[in-house]
Image (cartoon, rainbow, N blue to C red; front, side, top):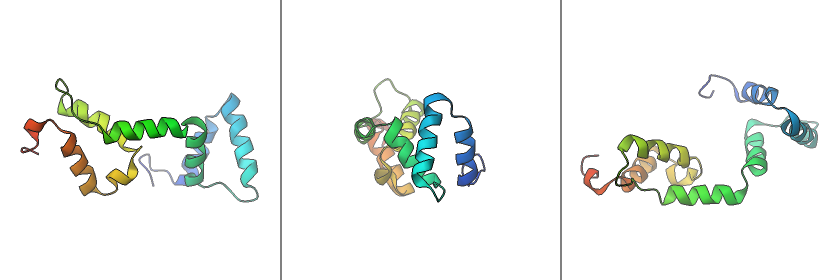
Length: 116
């Protein structure tokens, strides 16, 4: 189950139902290439990323995450939002909760490191 309480199969069906135009053409072609079996959620995510978020873009975002630090004028809440938005591009760097906390603390303003 995911955040909206759907199984991966139902989530895939829902997302695909929203496709129109070129996205729908892409989906039909992709689905055909996997026949006779159904495409899995994980396969869909990989294929979607390859199509709509090129590797160069994902690499750039991963580096942005790995170099992320809280700016002088940035609140902890603003830093946390940016951290959360970019973390998906570096899943190995935040594989465990401990890794995630460590990386978050390392990017925090130096004055806050002792408090966290």
